[in-house]
Length: 264
Image (cartoon, rainbow, N blue to C red):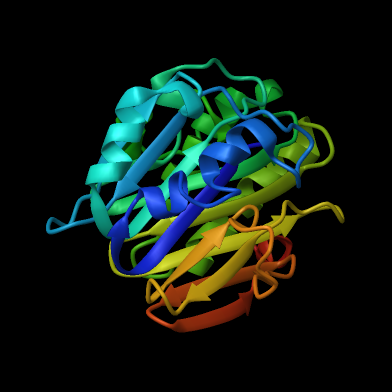
C-alpha cells in the first residue's frame, strides 16, 4: 500500500514534511512500518497551492529517495497547503499518469488502498465517469476513477457526501464482480482552501491515518504514519471517519458509503 502526507497551515518548505523528519515521507518510501509493504517505489507525486487557484503538480516514476529533481523542488517550494504521495502499485502499471496526486481545476486528490478486484470490472468502473469528466481520465487506477466520479457526484458542494456516493458505487461493483476486501482506503482531498481526509474499510483493516498540530510550524500534518517516532501527540483517526481540516480546526463526521448505497 502507498504512503502519503498532507499539510495545511502557515506556509512551510515542502521538505519539512517530505524529507526532513526522521520518519519523513521519503523515509517511509523505503521503511514504512504500518502497512503490508515496507517499500513504496512505484513513483511519487506532489500537489501544492500558492497564489493561483489551481495546484502545481509534479509526478514521476522513479523511487522518491533517488530523484534529485524532487529533492531540489522540496527545498525551494514553500506552501501553506500541499499533498505528497509515494506509490506502491496494487496492479496497474508504473507510469506518470498513475502516480498521485491527481488534479482537476482547483481540486487535488490522493489515495492509499484498494477497490477489491478492480481489474475484473475496470470497464464498468470507467463507465461510472460521466463524459464531462472522462476526458480527464489519464491513467488506469481505481484511485483516479474514484476521484473523477466524486467530482461528478458534487465534490465542490458536498465533499463528504460526494465521496460517500462515489465509494458506494465502487463498493457495489466490488461486491458484485470483484473480491474482498471490497474497499480499504485513506484519502486526502483539497480545493486549495480546506483539506479533507477519510479513513474507511469494509473489513476491520482500514489503513492508518494520523494528524497533528505543530505549534512550531503553525500548521497541521495529516499522514499515513507519524513523521517523528518520538512524538506521542499524533492523533489516530478512527475508521469510518471523514475529517475537515481548516486552520487549527478539525471536524470529524461519520463516513458511511454502505448507508448511502442502501438508501439508494
